[in-house]
Image 1 (cartoon, rainbow, N blue to C red):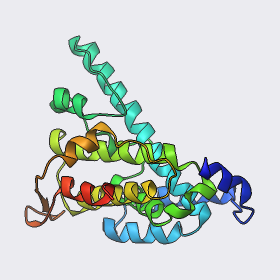
Image 2 (spheres, helix red, strand yellow; image 1 turned 180 degrees about the vertical axis):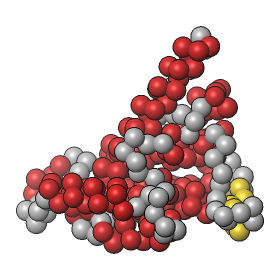
Image 3 (cartoon, one colour; image 1 turned 90 degrees about the vertical axis):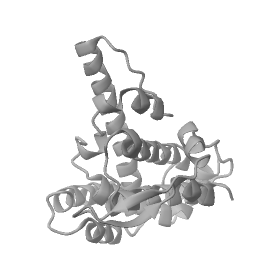
Length: 237
């Protein structure tokens, strides 16, 4: 694989696990829902923190851990539904849409309650932006293929939350979705053997629906987003 060849042949990448831990600890405590700064301001500050190869590794870890924690949370929710009602729910990481279509009202969107304390519109949005902007260097620090899978997984969770999980589509939510789409496209452009697009992405790409995007502080509609068009723009190149 090209990523492994690059990693083995490049002697210029000097990664510091201790610094990575410090960066992750710092951004966990300084940013998130309790910060007084607006989410776009937090995203900008975090992206500046993660502006080198160690920061790229931290960003990739945030994306992967978010997907892992969300999956564990949904498995626990499905188990709880079965315990209370006898109803069995299937939780498939490659396609969460059937789960949300069947049981959306009974589920809680997991990205607002991650055990790590990371917020989807602060640390996660920034991490996704960093991964996309530095996608050409991913092969020097990590395997881009599983990371791409996790980006698509979080995108699936985000869009399913809008459609079935009562998650409000505001400018912060739209910024996360837009960055997930653009980052997935940027990673796809760097890999030798691009994988097939996952089922939820292919389903949404067949649509042409436009969703209103609201101001985070009120009911005002300030813009719109067409997920299908945005995905076709990024993935059909």
